[in-house]
Amino acid sequence: MILTPTMLACFGLLASMGCGNSKAGQSTAKQIPGALQLSPANANVSAGASIRLTLLSGEAVVSNAACAWSASDPTILTSKGNGEFLGVAAGSTAVKVACEGKSASASVLVTSAANPSAIKITSGGVYSGNWTSKDPSVPVVTIITNEPVTIRNSTVSGPGELIVIYGSHEGADVTIDNVTGTATDPGIAGKAKGKFVDAQVVSRLSVTHCTLHKASFGVYVAASTLESMLIKDNMADDLDDRKSDGNGGYLLNQRTLGHFIQLNRVSLPNGGEIAWNQMINTDGEASTEDIFNFYESRATQNKVLLVHDNYLEGAFAAGQTTTYTGGGIQFDGDSSDSSIANGFIKVSENTVVHTAGFGISIAAGHDITVTRNRIVSCGKDRTGKWIARPDSTALGMWNYYQTTQYFNNYMVDNSGGLIRPDDRENPVPGDVSAPSASKELNNVIGTNIFEQPCLSNEKLLAAEAAEKTRWLASVSVAGEAIGDQH
Image (tube, rainbow, N blue to C red; front, side, top):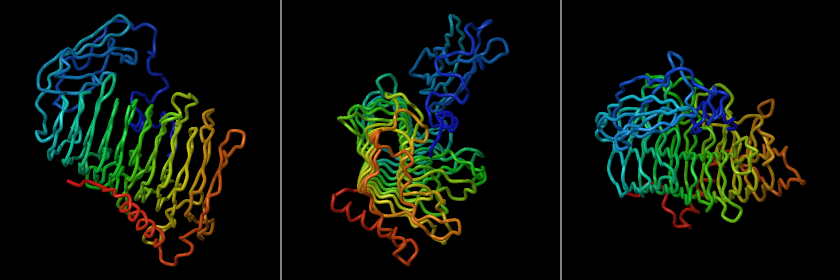
């Protein structure tokens, strides 16, 4: 989906950003009048859960963007910034905020976790277990250390976040291997299922041979400079980003806009790899936005991010009555800052099947190559109802945000074919939309041969099924093992 940074922040997709017009690092006034106080002055939180304190001057709420927050004992409570603290272990500690020469303090009591089967990891090591949480506000696994941590041969399940990683300073170092995660209904109106991996401030991340069911997100990485990143050989089914109605159902047209994999303002100075992952969503059972979304994330000219040999089936939102804006693989972000914009990413040999939107779209960024991918989408669900839009296309090259960081993008040797309805709902090809192709900026659409297998196969969706068979054969030839093997 193409979202502005403000929209992403409001949906909870951007770390450390607000939904108003003020910028991080700025306060609303040059001087805070009166004495400061924190509310509540005495707070309680369970280990593994979060609490937010409000900064007041008299009865007025004070912007805390330029304030420094701290806990006296970080082994009991750790600051996440902007007044939010995470309970680490049982005990009591003072918290303090300092703003423009003034300060205030409060006391926080951290009680034992409400979910004894959830786990909080505060030191490095190899961990294995069968963990769960029954509280949507308590993650199943919380990692709060920069020491190397490996989660291996494990299962995690619950109605909230499944694995949460909070790094600090130089970043966390986490390996997740052979883990199965299952997200369940939070049972709270307006709350969606949790993420399989929610990682922020990470220096090294490896997620391999994992299986995830019904999560709102698969792997979400934000606000990180990664020395190494590998997301490989994972399997996901029926991703679900819809918000619960609190009664076992869903609120209409209310979603958290989830993704199988999203990099959100991630820098990869040594490159990285996203490969041999499988995601299959079922008509009527799943809901997701872009399957892969790269938001203002980049590698380097000499060490690119490789996105290859992934199988992505089912980009749609079950039950949604408003316009669906997602698709297969999207490059996103409105920054004209060369240090932030998407860049140096190679997308090759991927298969995108059954999308209601686009196949692969470059809406933002530079030096992005899209080659030898297969996009095969017949445009209808298994009941014969159209899911494709009249403007759906297999490939898109459009500088949506009109930034100065849109150049050296290349789409060539892609194949397959996407079918969409015309104004009379007749099936017609939707191959390429390239309003930002530019010889001067070297944004090139080369030769892409769309043989339209959907139009040549009389059996509904048989052409799409053939793509899965072809991809599984390539998995066998490559010797890859997809999903949790333990």
